[in-house]
Length: 440
Ligand SMILES: [Zn+2]
Image (tube, rainbow, N blue to C red; front, top):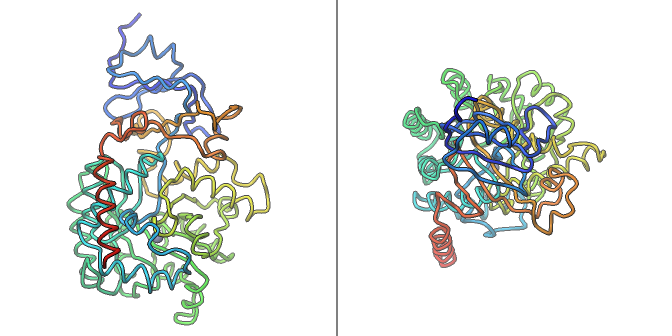
């Protein structure tokens, strides 16, 4: 018999859902991790003979899946959680969020808010998040330090903000940031034109040229409300997505966030371009923006990923709870209880997210050679009993706890304890900001 292979980490789990191949549930298997990558997924007895692990984690009551991907958010807005609720989008933005941002957002705010958001995301099973916010260099650094994977889309729009003077300034700063993180394994920097109604034609045209040249993704809020579509029809005599298409801005590198207003022409544009849709059901519900027809998009072979949006419009950053909302809402909109089944929902938050962020070769499934971005959910507690189907408990019962989180094989959460972020300090800073903002 050959000598056992020395490896860094062996994760033994009661259930593993690798996501690829589809709809598969493995029982009593183990994941061997070495150099941050998945080396093998084999039955536990075979793993015991084949590997000698520096560390073995036994997860006897747990479901292990790929790390969840939050494909849209504004992490630092966690510091505005509960600051302004129950307002429609335009009133919420113009009269509450934008004035508060102008007054309070600075480098420290973004750093502290991002850490609060990451701590919450890790505790709910997110290993990778897409972000769009001011001072993106702060978000990028904070993510790198906490060892989270991220896509940072630097924001671009016409008007000035605390972060810069206008579109040219944002582009210059963003491209410098892209250069700084060029060699990072965890941080990907890309274009974040805020929305068609905040970015002029000339700037959209410029991004359409730069993005494919640099092989960079483009992240944009699109068709979030009926108002946005009506205004575009009045001003440009075309729907916003058509305007993007005319600039050559719809491609497999494009992530269209929201898409609550979708007609047959829009579906054709998405299909023909290979652009991705990022669905944010709880934000759309809270701001009464509309409904994204997810099953219809999936049936048309359009890739749909999942995002929480910022904490001010959700108000939590748990992609796990977003999964339940997405699955339930998807059924209601399709008027079909079989629509968006549990496996399809999980795919949205894993492999579809990886595809949308152009990271499919690295993450999104538990496959040999992929990065060891892995989570475990404890299904041993009362709320998960009796247990007929582990995935059903994960998607629909939604009261269970994420116990372990790894990114590149490095532990970010062990037995529900954060490993790369300081919980007490983060709570202290959040309280401090609340005091400042309340007095302001
Ligand atoms: Zn957003």
